[in-house]
Image (cartoon, rainbow, N blue to C red; front, side, top):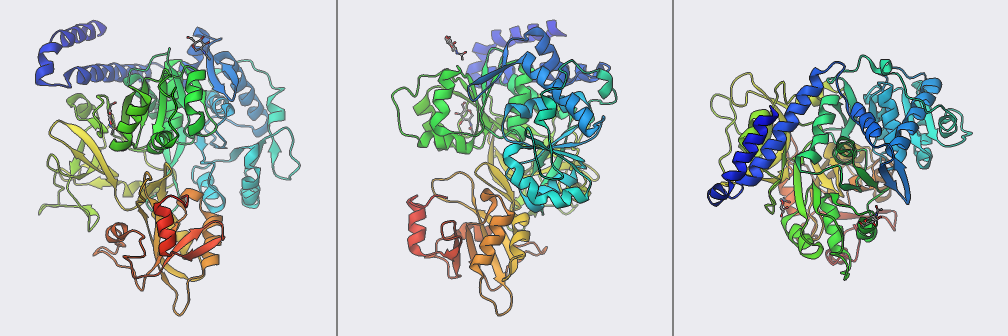
Length: 620
Ligand SMILES: *[C@@H]1O[C@H](CO)[C@@H](O)[C@H](O)[C@H]1NC(C)=O
Ligand SMILES: *[C@@H]1O[C@H](CO)[C@@H](O)[C@H](O)[C@H]1NC(C)=O
């Protein structure tokens, strides 16, 4: 096998200079295809061996290979591979004794971005327990929903999240949940301290038998994604998918010598799977941040010799917004992996901070299709190549933006979008690219499935994303179909927000969408609402409702009062026109309101407020 690759690679290099003139991206295509094939073969090998080779086994091998190598840098402390391994043994033993965990029990992690996130997860994996990664911004109803929909019986929370846990404690106790707090002591009935149980526990390795029944198709994690309707959904992530996502760094050419900077939350797949697990796969050193800080960014990179950074669109923008400094090209960062950067910010970033290779990805946690921008083409999220398409078949179909549904021909089949035309991205569901779906939510799972696409009876995963291919085979991301929008790097489910709004006193119905604001990535939340008969908009009650139930990034900052909400032919609320109209009071006759955190209420959106937002005098 490997001889063949060497030969192929040799040929590729020989013919490169000739082909380069004909196909300018041939070299990059080849390198990427070879890496993909090699990784595909590795995954096939891991699947075949009995018991299967897991990311945990990979970690344990790394511990054997370089016990003293630093695995994590965090707030001035360093943790070697060996230390992290021992910590995870302690965690596993403490949980075994305290919570009586056994193989297959789901444990919800409600944790901040801290090193213990990593060893608690490793400890759980040693016991064969899947972990549900809860977003630490969620509260009350959402928190309870996320906790229960994955079938968890145990929750482990950071000490700083104690209040959020107390808020839902009565319900958790009713459900018989074991609640653990990472503290030395806790005097609240129903919450058990855990740190004091972990420190004295033995750090000796645990037997493999504890996870003897786990196989590559078993659930490793639940990662939450925004629902298209209602509350967040728990995407089921199998061990196979953990491997596949962790290969992204390898596919981009990152090596074990690199130093990787994670400033994204670990509860999302980007930070956890691509960043942290990818770091384990490479056996590298990771610099972990509690949260992203633009002012500390380059200082950290210099201090820790960071060579690879992770980003979302906002990261790049915030870095570009910092004041210019003389030494800002003085760093070793040579690659950035992430998604969501716009071309203009991209160019500005490169101009200011030097020649950094950007690897823009396109993928969804639960999806079965992804792209990497492995050539450096500004604006593209990836490239179509036949190896990729063979392993992960996909299609781009014509989409009716007004009706918000696929265009179908007289036989009821979808129609492929032409080159250069915007279409809806679908990933074919196959053995190699399965769509596992969401925990405890058949209806949501079914909603993401699209049948009778290219022929009767076929099945595709609907990404809900609008993309475009150009004649050079580059792939561009355009937009997301109405049900979710993205703000501050988080996906927001419009119907979850609408549910909360309609629980407010005066609101009858709500139609939620995202609107663009000059100078910001993504879209900020806005809602068109109708009021109950004879009532005025209750500014302060709606404010309370929104602030109590929604994380800051999901709150609608603008409200538009309408006499009635327009529907499509299929009784979905029309959004496209509302999105286009935005929130400028000069152009909209309906009354508009603005969520003002200082006044703790919604206030009428005046032209002055509008101008202040445009001039960025009001922070959003
Ligand atoms: C970064 O690299 C320099 C020079 O190569 C080295 O002296 C220093 O110890 C490194 N810093 C860290 C945190 O590894
Ligand atoms: C793809 O990568 C290149 C170079 O690294 C970059 O210039 C380009 O902007 C990227 N595309 C996107 C969408 O970021």
